[in-house]
Amino acid sequence: MPYLGSTVFFVVLAATLSLALTGWLLLTRALTPRFVVAARDAWARRPLSTLLLGAVLGAGATLVGVVLLKTGLPILRLGGGLLLGALLLASLAGLTGLAELVGARLPGRHDDASPWRRTLRGALVLEASFVTPLLGWLAWLPLALLGGLGASAQAAGARLAQRLSGAPEPADAQA
Image (cartoon, rainbow, N blue to C red):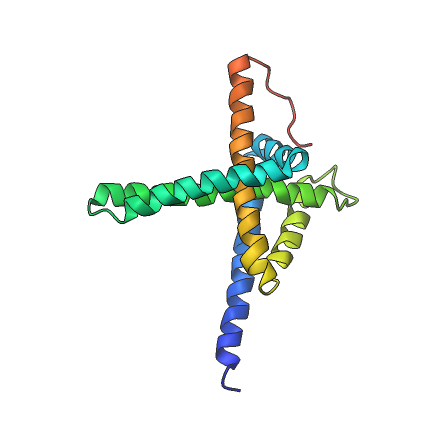
């Protein structure tokens, strides 16, 4: 039993990260429902272009962030850290749209009364797929985060276009 301690550590770590991710996704759903709906629509309409956009934005922003972190000036290092943090938050916000889409495609009885249940259901399914050894860790999780960044960019672009065109705000974004 020499490996029991490390096994328990990784199981607890995976469970804790999954719980934290569920919390982040539900928080994003609660605070920005219109944004999540726009991100969900980006995932549903154009999944491949959403992923490619996220890959391009992620590669560029990560490169800039890492270069800033490696500079000697503290203010630039702070800027690099903030950029990478914002990149992660934008990825998680777009990932909430994917969780919403997955949850909507697995309908439940109480979805109309509690729309957050779709996000919870989708988050649990995504997290289960992320902890799958090798494929989940090395392929699905990075692709989902890159796609989340692309969905966030598309949702923010749609929101900006709506504001610039003067179109009225939708009355309810709980769809």
